[in-house]
Image (cartoon, rainbow over all chains, first blue to last red; front, top):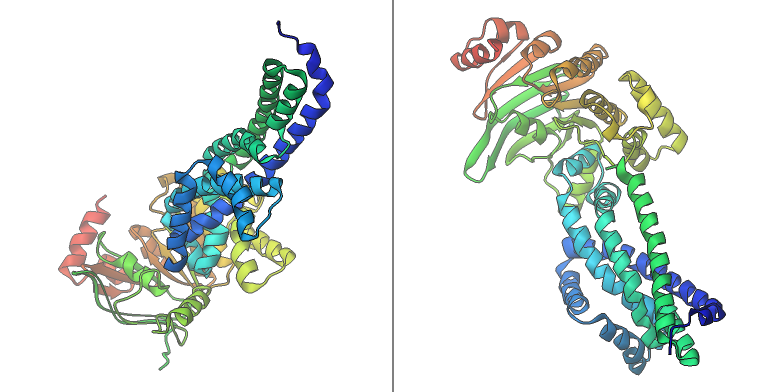
Length: 218
Length: 253
């Protein structure tokens, strides 16, 4: 049986919808991982030990175990203790927290690398520790990690395929559904791969624009 | 306890572990006075300057500004609030400028007045324009610091400090990091402040500048004030051997 790509256009709408969900998950989880990463970095560096120690355990859990397992735990596991999350929400939380922990590592290192003179400049004007952190240190630390954090976002986009297993109708699951009707895995997986590639190009273009925009302010 | 003088430092001492960097220093500065602190590196002159605004708190001794003790002993939270308050009255200019690279010149100048003094955006913008005009950089208001020369950066840093309307300005080797041809533009701004009778304490390596601008010169070595007096005496007729040695090395360059 030869390859026949003519069936793909028939499922164009289905794939497009899947792409939409993939983009929605990536953006939602990306934002969660960005702001969560900043929050986790601040907790890890400046938090009270009663907050810091549980956080370390939590970070270890997220970095040391498979993302797939984490998604199962959040989606299927939490139901047992009465937390019944929609699949999309569970997927965003799982992906978002997972990458927040990775982003937090980057931001922590970047906060520590901010020049001591920046603290002195701000404190001398009368800014408090908190104000200095919020207005001077964190904005600079975040700007400095935009490029490596961008790599995490691309990894997040690719790993978003994992949420298909908890039933979110994103691109990979859409392709599987098309395959189950047409029995044409090669064509549809390849079509899905192409769609991921398109999203990736857009994401990278966006990141490059962002990097250019912040170049002067570093 | 209040003092007549504007800035008073009493029995100031500071140690880093076993190393004593300041030993029983006393200094009074009157309103409008300009005092230069000179001395070899490691003499404690920057540490003394940084003690005035609690960047490097003293181990013992007192710092007063206009009847308010800067280095009060207070419980942690109250101490923080107190220090944040008094620092608004003490402008500081650093060797390496310490401008905020993620903010434009305007942002650098308006940040603290807006956050701490509650200025509206319009008021803060007007203030930034005034202060920049004063240092001759009105046209740079929307540039980022990375686009400025060293001399321009330092002038913006001075404008940023002045925007808080400080009672005293501290200069910590403000021209040491600059290329020689950029020193003069910063010196000019400092001279202009002197003409406006801003109270200033200046740590410097530039003897010519100290001699031409300052009312009084302190020579420090190994954590003590070896000699102090008007520039005419310190530079032309120093009484102490250590002062003479230092000046010989410095003026022959």
